[in-house]
Structures are given as structure tokens and as C-alpha cells.
Image 1 (cartoon, rainbow, N blue to C red):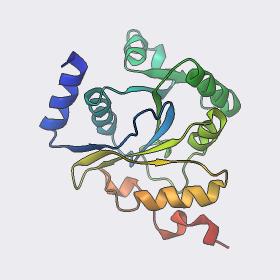
Image 2: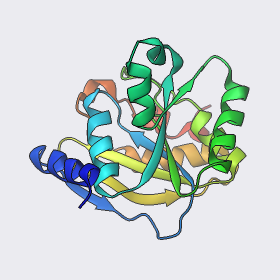
Image 3: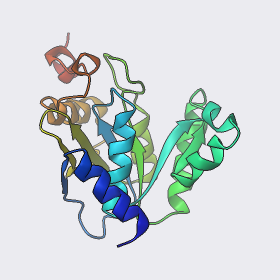
Amino acid sequence: MGFKKTIGKWGLRLGGWTTVNETPEGLGNAVCIVAPHTAIADFLVGLCYYWYYDMKFKVMIKIEFFKYPGLGWLLKKLGGIPVNRGHQNHLVEQMVDMFSQNKDTHLIICPEGTRKAVKHWKKGFYVIAQGANVPIILGFIDYKKKYCGIERIFYPTGDYEKDLAEIWDYYKDVKAKHPEGFNLDEQYRKPNEQK
């Protein structure tokens, strides 16, 4: 067992986590959204998970964090990609290019965009998946059940609101570390029903 796999295994075990990995063999590149995201601990759980299952991943991180001496190097070693979120079009192109240079890699995105409660998710994960022609993995971290992983692969139809409602419905019963920071009540889960 490799070093990272061992760290991942013991990190999950010490945290009391039960995991599931139903990623189909030969899936290839994919965008992996992870929700809920209300704590820094989510990153550590996700890191242990990916190391344990020996899956390749990249994660977008604000470019500002890479400016600190030594931290930028560490973040890149951990799969971090420096991004400027203020340039949406360039960001999509950057991620599509990243996929063209990597195989069997998951781009991990927290679509809430922040650890605070939000009413709407950022659309970037969907646009990137469509632009790169890759599926969306629905990753989850449920702190109440101490259960995390991948159970479903979602293929975008091109109808964003319809797809988003279905994705939100998948996450409606997942419990965040800080529940007050995860807001998927009925009025936001079904945007097509809003007048």
C-alpha cells in the first residue's frame, strides 16, 4: 500500500468515516462537485478519500493563496490549480485545456463557491463539464451519517435549470458539518416551478 493510500485509509478510519466509491471503471475525465461545503474539514475528508481510492484529481483554488511563500508549492503538490475567478470565460478554457492534458482526472469543485450559506450555486461546474464534454460526479460528505463518497454520475442534458433541480434533489438530505451553512430548501431546489 502506497504512502498516500495509507494516509487516506487511516485519516478516514480515525475520522469514523464510511465510504462508497461507485465510479465506473473507464469513466475517464470528469467534473466532481462536492456538497455540502461548510468547513475546511471538507477538504481534508475529500483528500483522504481520493488518496485512499488512488484516484487522480485537481482542485481549483483562488490564485491569492499561491502567493504565500511555500504554500503555493504545497497546494500544487496537493492537486491545486491557481485560478482567477473574476475571469469566467478564461477559467472555462483553462479547465478544458487541463482535461486535454490529463487522463482519468477528476476536477473537484464546490459549487456553492463559499463555506457560507448561499441561495444559488455557481454555474461554472456545469459550463466546464459541457465545454470539456465530460460527466459530472456527484460527490457528497454527510456528517450526520459519517458517510462520504461517490454514488452517482450525472450527464448534463444542456437544460441547466432542469439538471440543477435534479442535482439539488440528490443533495437535499445530505447533512453538512455546519447545517446552517447549507441551504437547499424547496424554493431553491425546484427553480422551474418558480414564477
